[in-house]
Length: 477
Image (cartoon, rainbow, N blue to C red):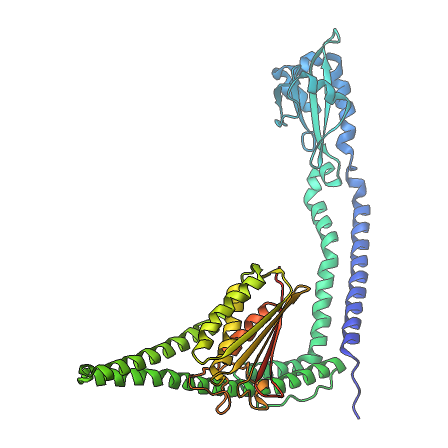
């Protein structure tokens, strides 16, 4: 038995700790070397506040005759007293106006701001500005001199700024450099252990991309987790293989459905074409024959239009952006209006339609879509009921829901058909076949609309014969 590899999480944790420890040790050594270098160079460097310490000396030399130093002809003499390599200056008039100097940015705008600046420092990002008043021999304010400097080691040693800047950047960058370096070295060593299993996984992914699922991944011995990943990938491959097989079956079913719809559409069109040819060949001279042909053409045309309308409706409700439009509806009035419509259809077969309403409330729903649901259910009952049949429609309103219960005394469904009646394009061949074409879309449309109303619809056979449909919808917000 070979050596059992540690779990990959422990290997990753160990690698991370090694990277961290090596980086800390290397960074500490680097910082120690840099500190020793700074200590060695400290005797040759100015302190961070070097130029700040020069200001009192300069001020002392020019305080005896401040009026002299506000004149531009003395600029050269003044600059000899100021170390311009690290200290900028500007001379201002009594009203705060700029006169001359190496610093031209304005920090005061008038005499009041100038006077108030004498007792505080002005800050400009990482630089400090100090204003000092200039007086004449009679102690009258004649202007001011401002100094700007940086309180930093680099600013106090401009001749060594490149060296100090490089040391500063190196001190900040070395932890990241070492972390990257050791991550690369240790990561490269670690990657060699899991390179082969991942290559197998990538090869498997490429095969799946080309829909080649007839392969099998080999278990990995490098780590427990990686082996679990390979097993999961293998399970996914098997599940995807089964899914593609199901998809192929669904595609075959879709082709069969399309063929069935094409047949349904071809039949009325063939009838229409045949009757038109009969009329064109002289059949229109016979009034009785003409009327019979026109009625057949009208019936076939309506059948084709009904199929196209249902296909358009299915296409609309199957879209992801399909929504309902709820409005406040008087349920009792809505049902009574629908009953009047259905009674007209029932009268053709002398079918008795009885209805009842429990509860009187107004609720929010989409009346157009609910009408579609009821039309599909009740017109089916009317279609399959025999002459002088009966349909009962009971409605219960309350607690934010509406319950429709519809019963007929038609032939009902086959014993197992109620599980499939809501499938798209499902049609029975024997019971409930009727004389008119059934495209197998009405109940699918009804179920989709009911679900959009957060409801449910069920269909079953009555013990005494006929179909029983129950529709529950919730009030929409």
